[in-house]
Image (cartoon, rainbow, N blue to C red; front, side, top):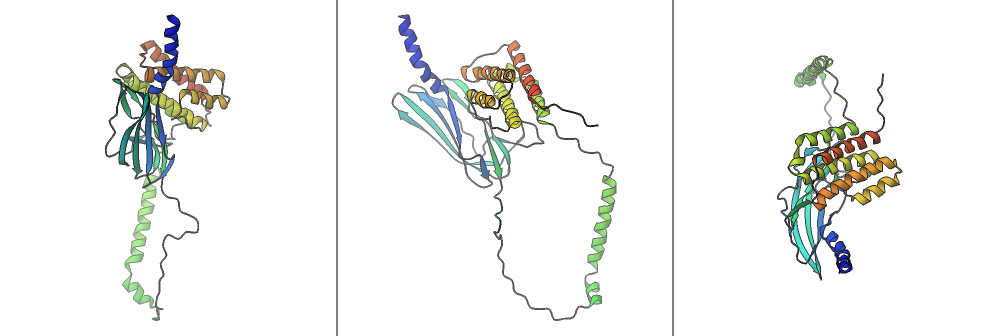
Length: 314
């Protein structure tokens, strides 16, 4: 009897895993302003499972980040939702839920499409965030933007300087006033303090972790808390090693980091952090306060030991 129960559990385990694994697709990582960006979400369900998903309306939730901003970035309100549709495809003993967005960015920047929540079997979870680059259409070499053919009639009248000065005397006066304004402005701003240097990636990451801890949302919503912690670390590792880890699974992330031949201790720490985070996000685990503090310390340690050594210039 025990062998029969074990056999049934082993057979059903892959189905349960598939049913809980969401997938996110994007038509392009680079999009021009005014162009169409397609985003697709998929999740496999068992025959008796249902999914509850409330799509955003009007504009897609999105942040714009830059080298001089913090990791959270600023709210980007120019990603318009052109259309939305969803469908369920039946395939025998299971079914596939699929949702499609067509989006149009109306401004430039490095955009982070926020993770959208969904509910399945009364349990809340999130799709992964998406990183895209929005830019204007680049000018093509040799292409003329305007093609204007002009014709003119030669001016036969002799130039009379006295007439010109009497008619346009205000032009040199205006130029003189502009020059005086520039001189006065430079004198006043000469002693203005120099702007502080922008934060390094290491400083931004540690600052973002501290802000996350200060929000204290770990005690009220652990899934949201660890989703943000996972995003902070993945953004840091993507920026530090010039690879995109924001949409990778933990397994894929560790494989890519191992390919970079990083220190074994560092890879072990990263793997432990993401495994604990995945347990909360996908397996509905609850971490005690001691494990929460340990994950925060591990995250800071990963940032510190993987960052380049900072030296002061004398």
